[in-house]
Image 1: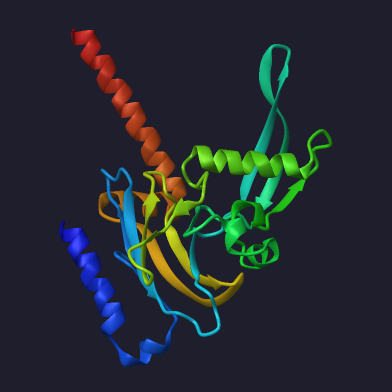
Image 2: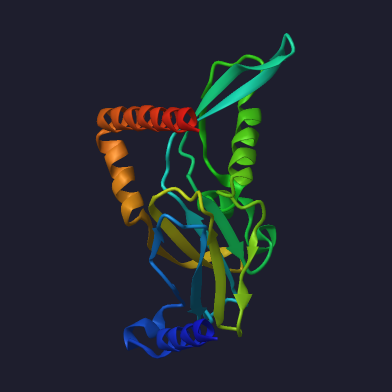
Length: 252
């Protein structure tokens, strides 16, 4: 109830706030600009809300939201059964793939805009430009692309469908963006598009930070900045744990 009340108040503030914003056909914001990953983090939802204004000469408008995580290189390996066991038989390096990708829309994307418009703004998984390089002669680039999308979806990092955007009236909209427990850290871009008569008439980009906090953040930073020392400490702790376990069993 408190969340709904806060959302309504925020929406009213967007509509009745700074007069300079009155001419903007699209205004949007997030309920939280920081996703803090603690030791017990199990995932969270971030509310995106906003308002649209009628554009002169346009017959109605749709809202499309795209959430992109930071781009990171990836490697996809193909497995084949040889001699009764599964072994790596090929691989591909993928550049330009966002680590997280979700799309929400007021209507199906093919009803909102033409494929050329969606491709220009990289809206929808089929319009993501991925740089895939492979020397595998038994599988083409398209097969590796499908494998990457399937893997990301199974990890919960890519949406397997276009999420709905709820219209609270003809002007107000909202949608929840889910971040799973394994969400990568980094700066995310939340893009909001207002599309009327198949054309983008307004757009807004808002950054959102996903960051580790607390002891988990300290361990993460130490492991990445002092990798050798972290590895030595990990080995020493494993040896100590094994020795203590051996002593305990011997006494028992």
